[in-house]
Length: 363
Image 1 (cartoon, rainbow, N blue to C red):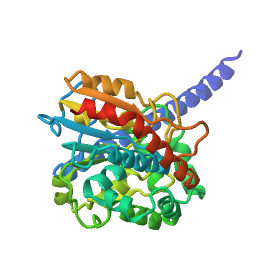
Image 2 (spheres, rainbow, N blue to C red):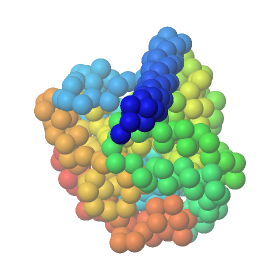
Image 3 (cartoon, helix red, strand yellow):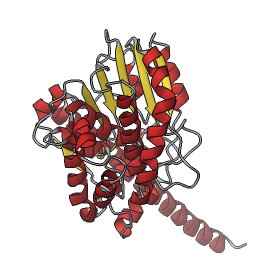
């Protein structure tokens, strides 16, 4: 190779290297700027929302809950779509017939998604009004199915659903990604139905939060934080019980998100502690009812649900737990209104099995 050719190739090579390094530096700078903005955005959000009292971090190890400390009987009701609301209705109807007034026995009820509707209905007294005013196994399923959210999704709803059903962990970052998709979904078709469902199950609780013992859960779509609403924080942020239940049931791509205070909120089950059992840790006895064991059965998100470990952490704080897993028939669609009548009967039959055990546990 001549000296001239050597110098030419060296100059060209050097220019290429310089160009590559410049691109890499530019990319690194952009990533750094993005990271700085994310930190700044988090700082701004924390400052602005520090006083609303809604955010309670999910416990990742055995921790006594400030909400449950010193209480005797507590109850946790997990989520599971229209199917599980109907199952709960049949279950608590059957328990009442067996002499268990579940509206008055627990000192604290934590409800998520379907469980938020059921707990709110119980503690507000609306459930017992429903059971006397309607033919419970005839007219009630018909009314319920007419106002259940429509399940046929549009493209934006489909995106939110697919993002939710692609999750492999329950990190805050994952929750934010799902929350962004939830916020971008056009769920207007279902909004009126959600309002009617909330009104049916919680009665006149559209402007206030009557039951002091009721707590609903949800996930902040923007921050990924776990939010907990009780009577005190509801009054502070002007949140009605019906809205708390609706927010907790705002499944990405199906309903909501629902505005609580100044936060848009999605379904409380979109995390790795789907029933939020850590909130009753430290109470003397906790009755926990979930749709699945976290491993088998129908699901509404692919975020892993280590419910067994969640409950072990509660027990490690000294709380005695009775855990009931409702279970689901093979192939059931949790959002299909056609499942309501069957779920109502299944829950009612299960109450006959569990009533004496619950009496013994809470004696």
